[in-house]
Amino acid sequence: MPKDIAPLIYEASMRKNWKVREALKDNAWILKIKPSINVSVEHISQFLALWILLNEVHFAELSEDDIIWKHTTSGHYSVASAYKAQFLGMVLSPMDKMVWKAWAPPKVRFFSWLILQDRIWTTDRLAKRGWPNCDLSPLCKRVQECGPHLFYKCRFFGQL
View 1: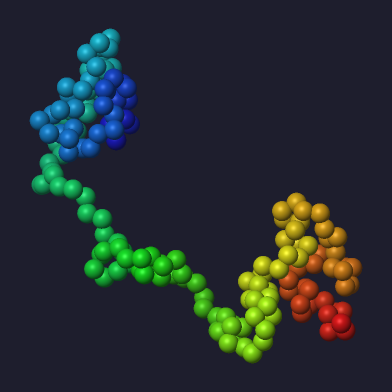
View 2 (view 1 turned 90 degrees about the vertical axis):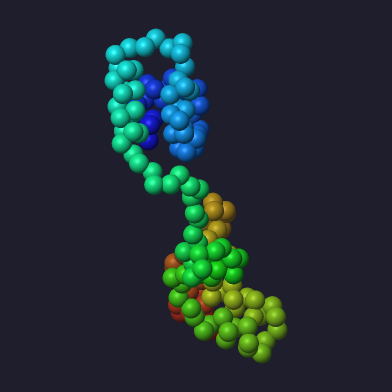
């Protein structure tokens, strides 16, 4: 970046947020350096370094950038491909079909879904948010209550 190569010239530039195409056209970037700066040897050195680097760069064709969406074969964005991209790398489980297809009242199915997603407000989740809680499992009073402990690890669970 010009800012890294020639910081004094960048600081003296009147136009900083410029497209490379606009700046290179007829060396327009040279005309946008403030004439009122106190020119030092370091200014001249950085100016020459930047000018030499820019003259060495040969652009075959100055054209607009092409944006290619990597999640479709055509390279064009679609909402459907963006939705699918959100789930890349996720492990699919048949549990969701088992929960939602089961014969049970809707509130039971929803509660089961929350259990599978570990979204039940147990004391471990309350503690993470700094909310007051009893900290220990109300059943065994030995370990901090969490979803797996509450539903299948606690020795008192099957005795309810």
